[in-house]
Image 1 (tube, rainbow, N blue to C red):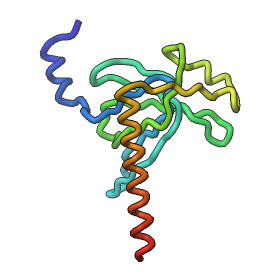
Image 2 (tube, helix red, strand yellow):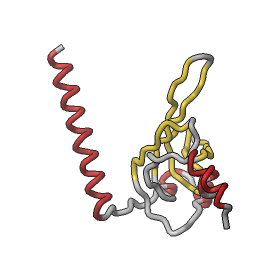
Image 3 (spheres, rainbow, N blue to C red):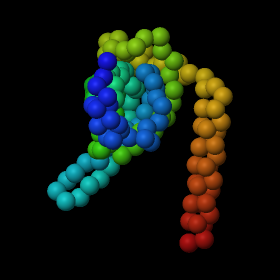
Image 4 (cartoon, rainbow, N blue to C red):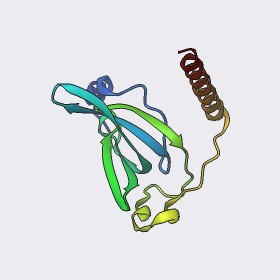
Amino acid sequence: MKNKVMTQVEDTGLKKDIPSFQIGDTIDVHQLILEGQKTRTQIFNGVVISRRGDGLREMFTVRRIVQGEGVERQFPLHSPKIAKIEVKRTGTVRRAKLYYLRDRVGKATRLRERKVKGAEAAANEKRSKKKAEAAAAAAAAANKA
């Protein structure tokens, strides 16, 4: 049971533009990196193997393989250092935590794709059409130049 005052304070720090993603989804996390006076965006892509906490304290863990070694990073979901999160692929799983992927190597780490239903499918289709139109416009602009 949460205190009402604490809930109001936490609500001010919550991000509104977080896409819905679940355990097993492959995502790109765009993280802002501060180097001296410059900021740049670094992308960390991988499979979500866990989510925990709620509200402002919610965290998620992303795992990927780099040069044969498994790399896991934990991100606070509502951190101002996270520019955006993109869901690349949805995975179907039957566990809340995918820690068993740590013991798997190569093709054994792959997950089946989840079928997207209803409104999500329409939104994904709309998004892919926008990307295709943007790519076509960029190609047309490049041909003119």
